[in-house]
Image: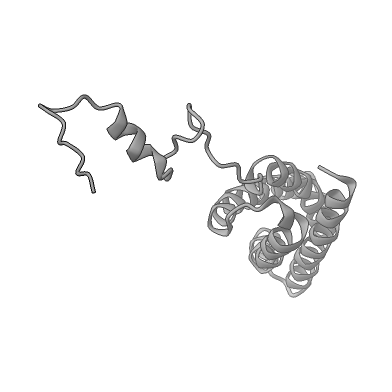
Length: 161
C-alpha cells in the first residue's frame, strides 16, 4: 500500500463516515432510536463507500467489480457489526447518543479499512499452472497432447505433391 492509496482511502472513508454520522445524527435528533438510526445511516453511506473505494481508492488494483462487491459487502457487514456492537455498549455505559455514534463509527472505519485493503479489494492475480504455457486456454495444449499420444495402429502416410 502506498501513501497515496492510504490518502485516497482516507478521503473516501471520511466522506462515507461523514455521511453516516450526518444521517445518523439527524435521525437521532429526530427521535429515531440510536441503533435504528445507525442502521439506516449505514445503508445510506454504503453505496458511497463501495463506489468510492472501487473507483478511487483501489482502482489500480484491478479487482473484478463483482468479486469486490460481494467481498466489500462482507467487509462492510463486519464493520457494521463492530459499529453496532460498540454503539450498544457505549450507550449502555451512559455515553450520549451522538458521541457514542461518532466514536463507534470511527472505530469501525478502522476495521473496514484493514479488511478492504487485505481482502475485499485485493489485486486480481491470475492462477498459475504447473507448467508454463500449458494453461487451459493455451492453443498449443492440444497439439502437445496429440504429439505425446501413442499412435493407434499404423500412422497414415503423408501425401506428397
